[in-house]
Image 1 (tube, rainbow, N blue to C red):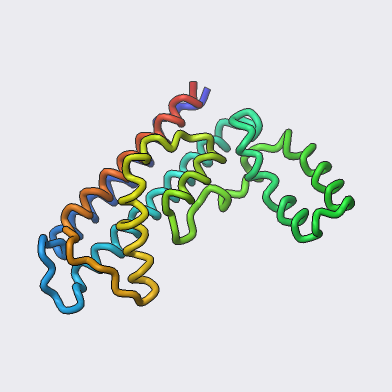
Image 2: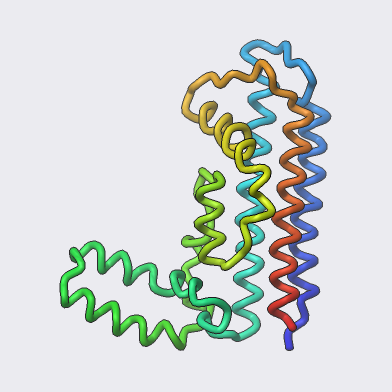
Length: 210
């Protein structure tokens, strides 16, 4: 039986580091009413908070997959949905070959190997984020991981509109309406989301270490 402590501590350490950095963001940039030209302070807060949201999620995924690899479990021994991570290349190949009979045979042959595969061959990209971690993407990734999306249901509108939407607009040269935004509250909201992520990944690690 593998000890979960090192992986739990890694998630805690990453969250604490990001919490300190977000506190510094709040101190340096966040104000209730941003009077800076072009609302630069508010925009800086939005870009930085999103970076911490996506960055911490990806760190949690990496720690979780490392834990699963270190347990020596086969992918199918966790959840069947996780087989997506071992078959992603073959699924792409099946699509690229227009689902031909030959491609289907290759896929079935790959499936036989996937049933005995460990996490050394798991493609982490299928459950990570690459710049747009909105509710839809999180839900899709969580389905593969077999995590419950319920803790994020109450935050989904704000997550999509503010944390992800505002950042997306800024990154693409738009000028989102930030007239009603409170940067300090935005940082607090992000910190709360990081805590939810940490709790979920740590709970899954503890449960699978038993």
